[in-house]
Length: 195
Ligand SMILES: [Zn+2]
Ligand SMILES: [Zn+2]
Image (cartoon, rainbow, N blue to C red; front, side):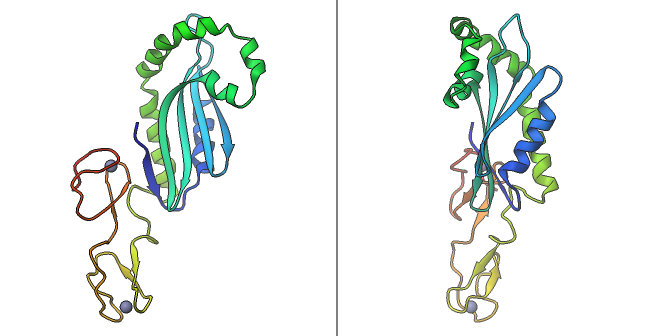
């Protein structure tokens, strides 16, 4: 799935903390790995003796120039655990069981519409932090190349010296927050038509 970009004063830690707090309960479990610039949160089903419980939603949260970029995928829980060197976990499990059950589990997670719940939790964190798919106030300003005055992005020419500001004024996709160029009619990230 394509990444979504939230612009504003938001960090990967803000999102990861909320996701773990919200989804590490009931029959779900959540864990986070990584550092403050790049965090992976995994959300999966806790104990599913009937089907194994080893496929998770994997939420990759990365610090971006102007906020945070978030991508959700699906992955075997063991994949990240193994890459962390937590090999002890593997000895508890029979790998052949897991391989045969991945498809069932992927379906289970899909049925829970977990990814929708995760997205709405993330969007709530962003909203509370004042971040959104819109450009932040900082990027909304174009600095004049001649006199260094910051101008609102809608100004065709510098408010201080009158110099032309050009056609490169930034805007974002309303669907995913991707920063796009003026002439594009479809978002290169999520392929939605641009308004
Ligand atoms: Zn100027
Ligand atoms: Zn988009």
